[in-house]
Amino acid sequence: MSPSESIKWFPVSMIIATLTLFPLYHTISATSHPLPPPLHPSSTRPSTTPNPPAYNDTSPAAAAALAGLATLQEYYNATSGLYATTGWWNSANCLTVLADAALLSPATAALAAPIFANTFARAPHARAKTAARSPADDGAPPCPPAQEPLRPQQPLPHPPSFLNAFYDDEAWWALAFLRAHAATGHAPYLDLAASLFADIARGGPTPCGGGGGGGGGGIWWDKPHRYIAAIANSLFLSLAAQLATRMPAPQQAAYRAAARAQWAWIQASGLLNARRLVNDGLDARRCANNGGPVWTYNQGVLVGALVALAAAEEDEAEEAEDDARRGAEYLAAAVGIADAAMAALADAEGILRERCEPACGADGAQFKGVFVRNLRALWEVVPEERFAVFLERNAERVWRGRGEGARLGLVWGCWDGEGDAGTQSSGVDALVGGWAVEVGRRGGVRG
Image (cartoon, rainbow, N blue to C red; front, side, top):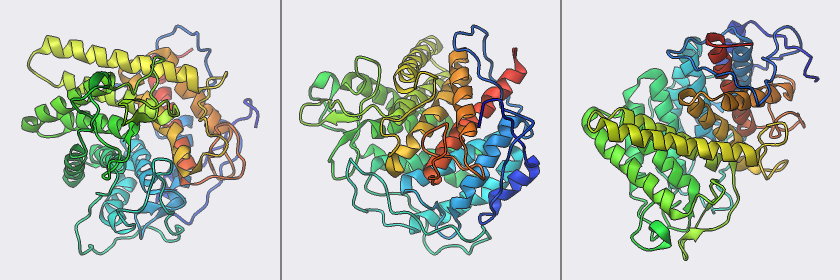
């Protein structure tokens, strides 16, 4: 499909309706409302972000995101509460992008609420919590194929538990339900996130302190203490910072202190290399950067965590001047990491690429969506034009390269006939980012 070709939409009400009709396949073909054309990255026009949000379900970018989301929901298995064809932690990310869309669209929020509730009740019973896993493979067996529509379910006999042997898994689910809580206000989701945080906090300290020495800090990746992973530590920071603004006021200070301590440890640990990029983890014997791969999601989660920590500082009433200074420092660090990642991990056209493409497995398929989701969070508080352009271009490329029925693949910009819930949800993350930018531009300067 050439850039000049246009997009033909189903009525948005029909697209939204497909969110709950999992066996229903829809088609999107070509014609009249393309996504906004890409802008030159050297543009100096300021981008804007909506505040308060005034999202429009009928915009072209919204329709693209909702079409991709409707296809994602074809993978949803109402019996297990998980997404078929991908892993345990990936399903948490699928739920997160559904919550993100729900926060942009009241109509989607109404349809998403029973999905959140169903997953909350059923997912913990769908897989063993201590399945074997290694640092090289943190996938999980796929769920059974999605075949039945969501319908009211009888209460299950045991309370749900998302605990398992891997702290990053627990954090992905905690963050997913924090987003579901933001979309619904349902208190048990916030309680779940807090309970998962308490378990994750018991995963530290590691033997590694600041400067490669002793003292200890951070958390392990898993309960057998086999690895110190960047992703687990950045997720822990993000979760602590977000709880510092979500929990009742008397509890916020403890979460804020935990987040500050975690960021201080990350800074001193060596996880960030000289290029301001996050490697995969630490060598626990030397307490030093292990030189592992620079994955997109490791950059994104840390960017989002710093945005959340800056917001937590804004919520602190005392020592306002110091808190403002710290918040500015956190955002400056987030901008530095985001800029480094966009420079190092995107191609010459500014399209995000994963080093494992075109064969990334279930885990790598998820990574780019995590990055753009968190870059969008940064853009919403630091509305720099280069971030808006990056989000727009990647959304456009994802949509241009879709397959029949709004199917989204691993490599953004082309469809090789292979996709799953991981590639789909990752692509939808990009489309939701493009939707948010389109709204921001409509509210501000748009050439």
